[in-house]
Image (cartoon, rainbow, N blue to C red; front, side, top):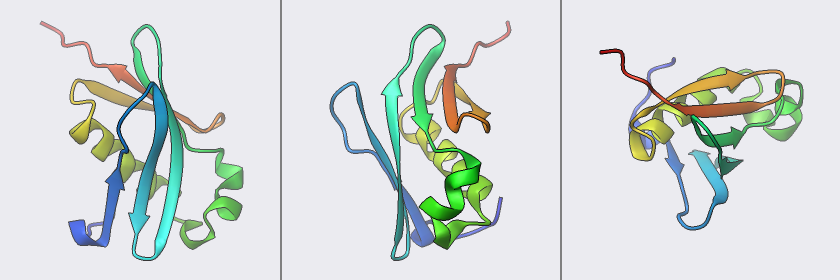
Length: 104
């Protein structure tokens, strides 16, 4: 992941409800991703959109999809899901935050 200072970008979560949006902000640019609670070991499902559509949805970040998704994942885990790990479904355009099971 590219090194950058925290002032270069931020991830925000408006609170409330069983679903909502995660906002990624970088300078004058923004990307919004829909989230909802999951079931079973899936705590949260984040819809990031399919990679084929990324260029049209976020042309300012066309070649940086993975970098941005990694930033979002890191912040979701840090801010809201400390006991989770993330699995990316590139084909479907989802990130599944699953309860991380510790091995004793």
